[in-house]
Length: 416
Image (tube, rainbow, N blue to C red):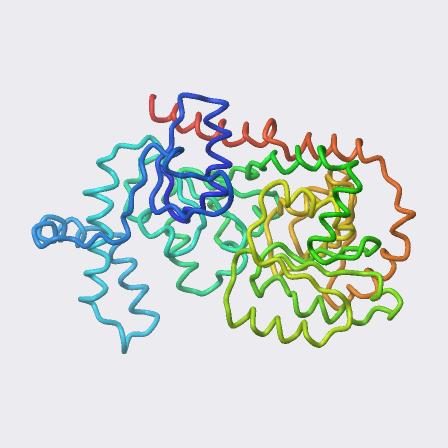
């Protein structure tokens, strides 16, 4: 059963590939969010639950109050909450919230008898059920990226660590992210960590190969987006979250020589992670500049994404933090260039001799960008060689095995 963040595009991508390779697997989910094309959750998941509205009944309050009060976990959480602000802590509201969670786990989740409970996106809210699971349960916590890097409050860290200690396995996408996790949450978790990359959507890569040599079609796509035929296209990030530094990046682009700015178009992908106050601020910032900027607000299907990757001459990836990004891998697979922040956990590209440029700060972008634009037509590469490297490291033939091995190890633990 999948719990935590129920984002359909990532989860169906992952689970459908695992099910294709092992048809003994089936998946259910709690509280799915439909995002993207071909992600009809009703047709994929065996069951879809919705536990969040649950409120414990009076009879179940009586049934579960004593077991909860005898739980060491409850009192550890209670003492922690009280330590945050002793003057405002109120025991009864805290007790009732915990009773609701405890009763939900014991009465509605555990009796379903799933072999594995897989929690996605590791924050206090998404892991709240796990702290009340029995130690012998087969449970997995999967970090996605921003949940590891951007949620650093004392309260969030405490609850996440409690949940991680109760988990059977913890997945993380790169060894660098694993090192950061252990620094943040403690070396005692090291024996639980599995390096497992999320499974890529091969439809995008297949479409990249299909359209790679269709120059006129790509020119038409540029035209549809409002990009001149001969312009150099700069892709900026892959969602509308403020953490992707769109405004700071545009300021750096603005520093380029006027003759360069006349030859470029910045494409901002703002299709999800949208918050209207930030989008309004971003729109006001865009109005100040004299170079072409295209904002993508509507979701793109895999064919449109593949065309976007092919026309993107340089992808600029400078978020505050990130996990491995499929958009970066897609741009590289298309044979194009990437400028990424050196603080991002992208060493896996370097280790496998997949070239990208890096900057140590956003302020370095302007010089690096100017240099790359001026030499872009001289950057000849063996695209087929790069493709083979990416296929070997990032394609499901490799990445799905990491997840299947982990699942099978837990099934084996269940049997014996």
